[in-house]
Length: 441
Image (cartoon, rainbow, N blue to C red; front, side, top):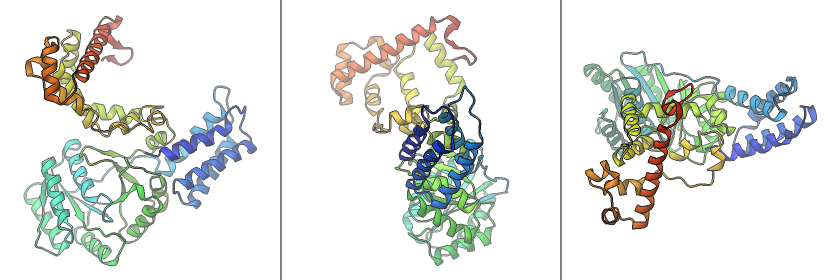
């Protein structure tokens, strides 16, 4: 995500490396490179120029203290300005209605239907809501089927009328259904087109007029750059939407849409989405995104994701097992499953400061754990609970059952033993394996 932009900004900051102070001369070269990096990321020239003019003015007005180099100061200024350009602070959903009605709009292929499912899952699992998904795309039968599949995955009801060709009436009936079944959020997945056209705009405007939604969310494919910004403007002029959703952030995102859209339509980005998993939806935090663009990582988001997946009671039980040296393959598999739920592995690693650049050319697949899981799944319950019981005869059977070579099974067993030895050593540490300031881990 944003790899190319991150690299070019890093190159720009090198202009100040070794400089004792900021001058108009050395700042000019840096600002020029920053502007070029933004334009290459598909940011509109006017926005890029206005942004770099602000950076230049701030940089020349700052005094560099002894503990901070000009390069470090410039990184901070750019980070602050990037965060401001993207909205400054996060923007929450308005979910106070009874029911709350959320209208989802956007072009075909932008990820509207998948986002609708993710939003329903987010509101159900994190906000304690009871959502109803509404299939209001009357032109694409596959959209109704897709929403039904997503709804079944997350155990959320889907309202549809496949034979009805009146989208406004479908939505009105859906709201009546929501009230009768005590659903407190209605999420409406509307029709899209390959390009902005009058029929689509009129239909979604009619739905808006009929149900007066609390939120109108415009979904945009972040890989389309400046085109996404132009489409957002066309939709906003007609719908006056309340927020933007950036999808496909796990792809080859240049960054133009994320950086430009708030400036252009003056509406906040509310969520970012990546991948197909229903859990991969995140609140958009401008400052955290700015940090990631500049290669600073995003430890706050990483910790939050971990906290969502790791149950406190289960963590206590696991800690007890580790202290008694009873950590087994069943525990290990549970940990893998929780890590997978946190999202795209490469994206997670990119949240660690300094890791983004290190792994940019490394292919880290979400299937990376499949081989390990196959080995563990080929063990008997007794073997999973008693790792020391697995002799060479058992290993040969496990290799055959998992479709792996015996050497791969041996290597995995060795790595598991090394991990257990490390856990044993941590138990012998002074303070009982506690990290100062964080309590027992």
